Each structure stands twice: as C-alpha cells, then as structure tokens.
Image 1: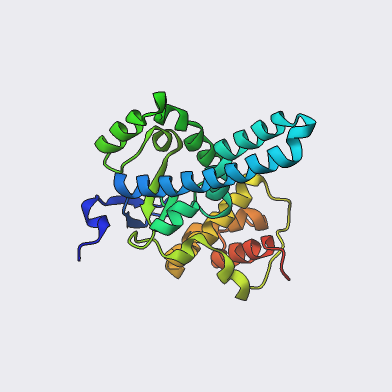
Image 2: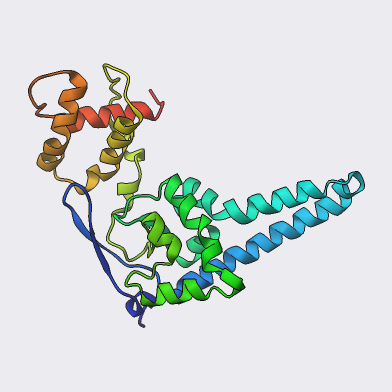
Length: 242
C-alpha cells in the first residue's frame, strides 16, 4: 500500500554542524485533516465555556470574560501545543505531523507566535484561499506563516531525524558540571542545542565543535580536547537534577 508521504516531496536540510538529513513536509490533505481535528476540539472547548458562561457568569454580566477566553483559545491554541508539546497539537499528533524549524530543530516560541499570528492572512475572507495557493506552489507546502517564521510541518514517522536529537533526557547518565561563570541566555541556548544534536555527531566531530566554547567557558587559552563532555555536563546541570 502506498503511504501518503509518497504523494509529497522531500526536503533536504543541514544543521549548523554540517549534518545533512531529509525531512518530508506534510501535504495539503494531511494538514487540512489535522487542522479540522483541532478546530473540532476548539469548538468543543468553546461549547463547554459557553455553558459555563450561561450558568455561572451570565447573571453577573461576565460576557467580557467569555470573550477573553474565546480570544485566548482561538489565538494561542496552536502556540501552546507548539511550545509545550514539541510542535504537535492533538490534530497533528493523530496524523503523525509536527511543526519544526527549517533545520529540523524544535520550533521556538517566537517562530510559533509568528506563524500562528499570520493565520489571519491565510483565512482572509474566511476561505483560506491564500493558504491553499501558497502551500500548493511551495515545494515544502508552506503557508505565509511558515515562510515568515521559517518553519515546516513534517511527517514525524518518515523524516530522517533521530527522535532523541530533540530530547535531552538521555543526559541522565552524565555527571552534572557547574559552569565557572554566569552564562548568557545565548550561551545556554547554544549548549542545549548542542546537547540535543549530540546523538547526530561522531565523538571527534562533537569535540571539534564544542572545543572553542568549552575553552572560553573554562577561561583557557588552548582549545579543550574533550569539550563535548564538558558541555554535556553543563547541559545536564540545567535539568535541575543532582
């Protein structure tokens, strides 16, 4: 039986470490089905909120509370799942889809906000013609929000990114190392990104990449030969477990 992904196209990408892999962007049919499921879920939630409003808040003139809840649900539903469920809303999870950055890394909060903010462009006059046209002519089936945020919606079961590359729970076997100085936000993000991608790297390549940063953190003039282990230890300390 032919899987749905064979009707779509592949998208080759490369990490900053020079590792090339293949992503399989989800096509229009899969994305429409996922969006329909999520829309149905939002309708159910809104129906429950409406019942609560009429029975609890309506006597006290709480219409503004209902409208506020509706706004939050409508605008931040997808942002919430992108950030806290690694790019998978319930509809995407059922269809085996996920939102990622163009390089295959987990979608950031800023990118998620941008791609979902631009849904008003997709649904201009309520027909989603713009989203349909842009996704149809785009190699990776991107709508305007994806172009602006630098994101893709991919098939998780087919795309060639090891699942552990987006996780750091495998760090549990590594001894935590406390950095010798306070780290900037950018340094922390860089260390965490290195830890996520470490399973994709060979030991020699990982040490080569980690060496300069590890040397700067240790205030040594020479490149650290085992910088990967040092950065992984620092990443382990970020988990808060001892």
